[in-house]
Amino acid sequence: MAKAGRPDGVPSVVRAVRILEAVGNAVRPPTLGELARSLGIPKSTTHDLCATLVQERLLSRSADGRFRLGVRVLELYRAYDAASDLSAAFAEVCEELLPRHEETLVLSVLDGPEVVYVACRNGTQPIAVNYRIGLRLPAHCTATGKAILSALPEQQVRQLFACAELPRPTRRSVGSVDELVEELVRTRQRGYSVDDEETVEGMCCVGAPVYTRSGVSAGVAFSTVKARLTPSRLEELARQVTGLARRLSERLGARP
Image (cartoon, rainbow, N blue to C red):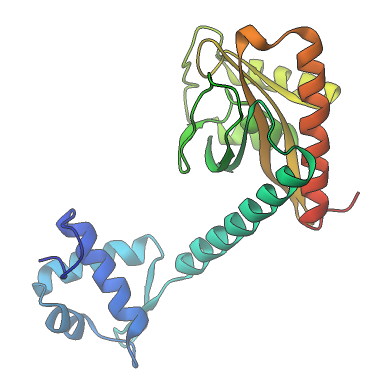
C-alpha cells in the first residue's frame, strides 16, 4: 500500500525504494528479518528484492547479514550533483552570452550509447522542436552526442557501440560504427558536430563538447529547423555554440 500523499506505483519498485529508505534511515544496519517486519513485506519477497539491490550495488550485505547502502547510491548522487551544477552553469552562461536567442539550446550528458538531456533553453522562434529533461536519444545521431564522442578515444567509442546495432531514426542516420568513427574525425577537424536530419527529419543541430578538469563532461547544441539553416547560418551557429561551450567549460574548471 502506498503511503498517504503518494500515488500508487509498481509494487516491486515501491517496495525496493522503501527498503533503500529504511536502510538509509536506520540507526543500525538492519537484517533481512528486521526489514521485513518493519516494512510489512513477506520475508521471501524482501529476500528477493534485497538480493537484486545487492546485485545492482544499491545495497551491500556484511558477513553478519546486515544491510547498508551500496556504492552505487553514491555514484548516482555524484551524477545528480554534477548534472545539477552543470545545468546551473549552462543557464548562467546562456544568459550571459546568448540572451533571447532565436534557436533552442540543449545540454546533454552521455550514458552508455545514449545521451540524456539535462537542460534546455527554448528559442524565440515559433516553430521549434521541444525537448524534455530526461529525454534519451542515440548518441551517434545527435549533435550533442557526436560532440561528446568526438572527444573520446576511438577505442572507447568502438567499445560503447560494440554490442549494439546502431539504430537509425531516419534514413540519414549513421548506420555503422565505422561510419560513426569517420564522422567523428570530421567533427574534430571542423571543431563542431552536426546532426543533419539524423534524429528527426526536418531538424538540424550544431553542437560542441563541454569539458571539466577531468575531461569531456557534456555536449551543448543549437537545434533548428532545416529550412532555416543556410550555409552562413550554419557557420554563425557553429561559432556561437563553440564559444558557449568554451565559456561553459571554463566555468566548470576546465583548463584553456
